[in-house]
Length: 155
Image (cartoon, rainbow, N blue to C red; front, side, top):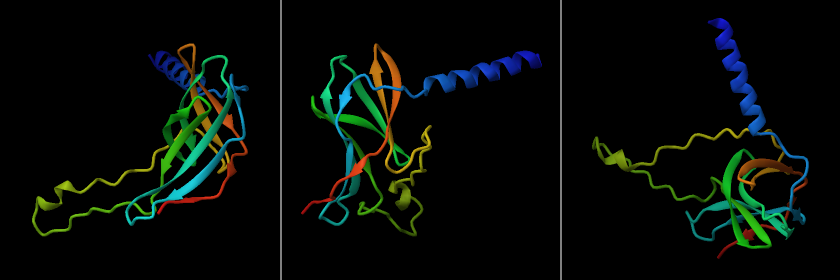
């Protein structure tokens, strides 16, 4: 019985390791990846970081799916065929609607604080991992040396 349990545990861990294996080459050509921080000009309007992936050519019809950056993950949005963006919200300048009351049920509508998520990659501040679909299989690629561009401040 213990042999079966040990075999099951080994197989489980080997499956996890193989699903998050980083690919050596990205099957599409990209230009210099960069990020910009942004802050809304209105109190409570939000703030965040946008990571931009300029796509030079995509002859294999690869679909970029998700991005992992600075301890967070998000779905990738396509601005057009030549630009994909990962949008990450940050804590600064977020709207805080907290109801404080001595009535037992008045605070029921308060939002539960979010726990920080644990991403499956150890990344430096100038690195991200992109998941993409190739022939209906999810693969991962690390992008290093992401450049910071000037922040955007909205009115």
